[in-house]
Image 1 (cartoon, each protein chain N blue to C red):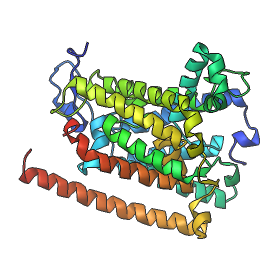
Image 2 (cartoon, each protein chain N blue to C red; image 1 turned 135 degrees about the vertical axis):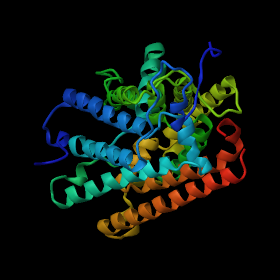
Image 3 (cartoon, chains in turn green, orange; image 1 turned 180 degrees about the vertical axis):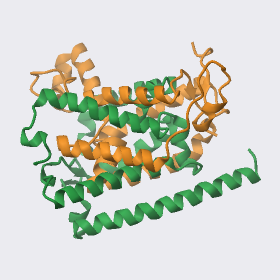
Length: 201
Length: 193
């Protein structure tokens, strides 16, 4: 068995769109199950009252990361054929800061806004319209921001490569960090719940 | 239009719905279970397609398709838009991420329906009006749209996908998202608390 299946020509472009639809269903399903169709649930992360965003995100990351590592190690999956977005450090950090600000102001991120819309939230629909407007603004201003958009190019590069540490060691370190983070997150949630009991708002 | 929409309260609040006819919403799944499921979907995407998940890229395709329908010359002349148009042989909407995001809408609807969580409303804290909440929703979306394009992806395409691939830029992006959100949280707390 050779994976990624699409890259080995197991099916063509048209079938890939059906695959996209099915994978999307899974994506949307689990986002909604986690409660990420609700802006209040999502933004509670940034007030330390409910750290589900961190917990869900990092359980998903370590699940897929461990799967990638073992499938690659067993030779089932050719990791060099899995697309890696090239790194442009400065615009990515600035874009990330903007996205974080927009997240807590708007209440959703792009994917969760879709789930919010699917479950009837009008604010999610308006948030999506805002995202479209933002993309249009970015597109129209592209000639002026292009120099910054392509600044600090580092190519397709991973943490193990940049730090010069073996892949498996980084995987293990991320797992340790995540598990430590989960324990810390639960403690923070409990402390916040206690504080709320002491001083009701 | 907004006057008749009810405020949706998050999480466990579904159980205290005032309408006797509406089935009470089920509680959300344990975050680790939901995250594990999400991780398996992401892994399936890597194994089947050789690529991860995304969201904001589909919105770009939609914006470019709209722009191309209204002002084709203007769209083709713009390098950012042109990338989504490709060689022009097919619509920018015949795109992997567009189909994936349609799936996200369907998947969200399926899960929401099964849990009794689909109901029209505006999700906000008690201290803010519907109008102000929608104003923030639009403004935040705008900032997010610009940020996602600048970063070449959003929470799905960069943080989740790149996170699992240990992509260096994605990890820097992820830290920046949390930093930006925590730094801004204090100033918009009235919206949520």
